[in-house]
Image (tube, rainbow, N blue to C red; front, side):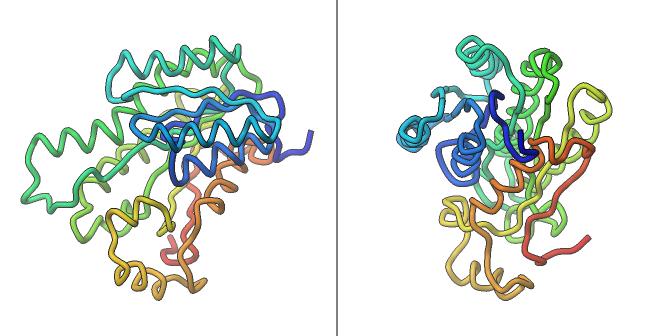
Length: 253
């Protein structure tokens, strides 16, 4: 097996109907994985991902659930394990800013919603997945963060950045708690041209981001997917507790 392949492994991708989740589910399948394609509301996109994987000779399972609900999160993991027989890779991708606002203007209800959508979902799915991952010889978790953790979430994204910051801490905590059985890492994407920015960034803002990026452009979802595949594969067998920047040089730590 090549080190960047996932042949015979079972991978769950949350929020796989659009953007980075979609690109990663397709890339995992191309690398030989059996893919659990989860969605909450993006049914058409998730169905298209499953159909594409199957049309190319791969295996995929469609999974629906509101991951902020414990029962749904448990069911998504359980269904995939029941259908595929195991779980080797978990990509916690599902999340959203929900609504941009300053912290001063943020209601308690919105605060809870943003943390539920971005942090609680990862907690619930990961907790359910851990016993299954422990049974794999190649177990790994990859969490999807955001560059706004570093930049402070200016422009109304501060609550989202705070929720994703919780995931950064969770990533390193899990890396310690689950070692050596499960590797746990995270990606920290910069500005990636996906539906996320179509919703939350104006064309003028996207151009500003482009100018701030050393490589002279914003990223695309497929580039992030390739990085997730790397962390999920044996090519990253000695990497855990790491945060991988994917931002074209817009920010350097």
